[in-house]
Image (spheres, rainbow, N blue to C red):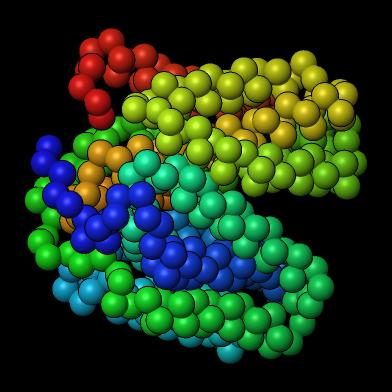
Length: 394
């Protein structure tokens, strides 16, 4: 595949900080808003007496919105420009975030969820495309490691803000909408540096899912394991004999692993001519960690140690997978593949909790670990298959 020179990379080793600050700060503000919004909305619905099933159904609109928004984002960016599309997405997500406070009827929360998560999906796709396009090839892993770390901090700050301001009144909604609105400032400042999509994607959207399968499969596994693990690990921990605070601390340790390994993994991936072996190695470590959980779950310290490295491996699939995508494609193809990347993540976030929850119901509490291992095993099998039957670097 031809690799046209990226207009942002005039000096191949120079990091274009205005572009990166714009994209990273934009998505971090969104991360704070989502981290605040998810527990906030669930608790408000719980207080209103909405059933858990309906709360789950409303929350599932996030994945549906992401799957709808992903295929059309590249077309919007081509027609209206990357920065302008991002600014409109900021406006839609901020208005819909505030709209939850004023929407008394529960049914209104479905279109609001769809609008909010559809717009934030657009921001994710275009931010990641902008970062990938702006990053110098030999430092792409480092740049994406910084991005993933800052995003993790943003997601962690959301629940922290929620614990400080609570769920009463308009204040939490104003904070969420305000955080998203702040994202418009760096985007506007760097708008003239945003990448230009001169051509429409050369392939149908779904072809991009299979164009760089090592990357898209990695993010599918990441989405499934992250969403399923975070939502069902508290249940697994309680049934294993830990109390709520011990289970929450284990999740925190996993989050710390998520944060501290991204930059080192990104920097290491920059030294590799082919990132696929690193992705496969992280999947193998994830598989081993999952299989160790039932054996170590009675010991909090050993479980925490496994989860620290396990959290790094899980999130590394996202960071290194994104870097692998950026090293293979450029321009419009990269933007469309980035949309396919986020689409696969969204599919994973829907499939993961369903599969892991079913595994617990069918095989008992350890079904949690077996299901996680199955997702990692699926990626390991795919990686071996790619090495054996498709030596071409994809």
